[in-house]
Amino acid sequence: MNGFFAHVDWAEIVQATLDTLVMLGGSLLLTLLIGLPLGVLLFLTGPGGPWRSRVANGALALLVNLLRSVPFIILLIVMIPLTVLLVGTSLGVAGAIPPLVVGAAPFFARLVETSLREVDRNTIEAVQAMGATTRDLVFRALLPEALPGIVAGATVTAIALVSFTAMAGVVGAGGLGDLAIRFGYQRFQTDVMLVTVALLLALVQLLQMAGDALVRRFTRT
Image (cartoon, rainbow, N blue to C red):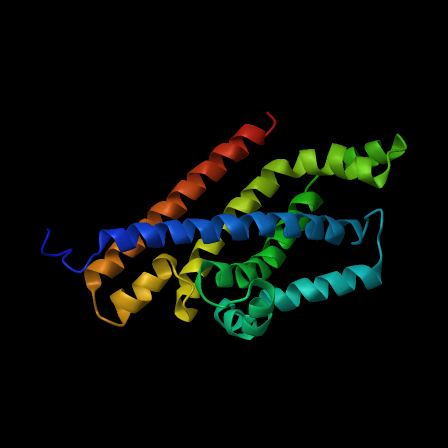
């Protein structure tokens, strides 16, 4: 067994795992902060929304669809100048976070919009009939009712970000993906590849379990 893992530097594995967790945590936080209000705006300006506007909704939908349609590996490369402008580098953990956020926020926004559209229309109409402002409608009716769906969407987004962080290793972002590419693929070190893949699978499983637990916690019975 020790012979099989002869190429594995466990100190590097630990550091790469920490880098992946930092990338995931930082990008997920910013994705939620950007994607949630964007999804709410898509709902509010859409058909039947209190701020319905074909122009505003069309512009937001176009932006979201354009960003979602760009393959992430291409987005990483295209955003290098902007990433350098924002964080001073396109390499390492810091250089990976801007493209991760740009790639994931539109995806999460659509999931938020879908969750809001599943809120019972009678609940929305009842709140509006009581003279509630749009702010009250959002924070006292829409978000509480859609919370399980939003949490589920955040879980799906977090798992997608794990795969994005792995792809970011192609451009030197660090983390487990970088190890898998530099050692597992380019140097044919199968043991390194297997360890990094196993850790990524474990991380995805933990995220899914945590997300499912939160969904059950917030689902009204």
